[in-house]
Length: 323
Image 1: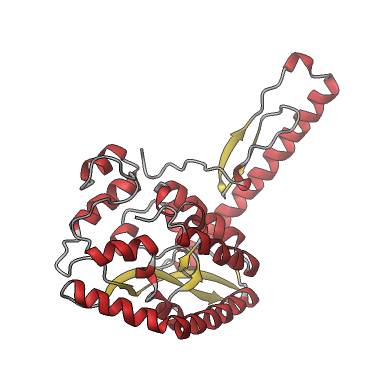
Image 2: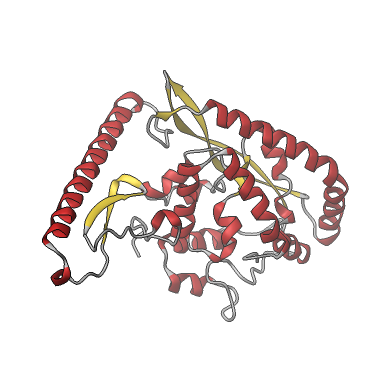
């Protein structure tokens, strides 16, 4: 599968529209991408008036789609002209949303500070277990890719900003990252055969996760299964590099493999959890994850963030999709 191809996933936003069996073009995710919607209909049974109505709908929908496409292209050209000297830009110019992002930041600080106070004994106990289980640092540090908003008059755009990402160490300190890099490349390309070939365990595995990874420690397996290895990211949230809710921050070599569509998932503050963590976690393919991340960015609101936070709790407690 070509990684530039985008396959639709099931969601309310992706449902086919049904209007008298008519066939017409409509925007899909971005205004420069279109899909053909159709429903079975017996054309012989359609009355002339219905056919006229269908033609009018088709014409109107096409004109609207063309207008959206031209507006999008105009915005992209404007962005290229104004920011051609900024190679780190990951989005075009968009409207600012100061109230939403201010409320989101307040939520992050309140929840994170409360969580750190409550979880401090748990964090200390996990640190002791890791130190007892294997030699090496307790906390794993890694460069991840995030984004920060930059203002341009009354508009803004998102600019790539790398940061230091924290997790409890779940692997041996001498672990070779090459296995993960090869798996990620196959995962992004959607190469199922290559993913299965790379898997350390060949039977009874989840294709979309590295299973039986020999680099993972005994305590690390438990931490990953329960997502407790993610708790140090609360420090990233406090620092403002991440939010509680948002797309997961990728590793730089992952971003190097991204298509233009995949780059859209960077156009917001990265988070500890999001739509795909709440719904499928490790059970989703890369394209599905991208579509859910982009859907979140298009729909993000304070109440959606609350809903995702609440929905993540049972997903974590039930270890849904975790390995």
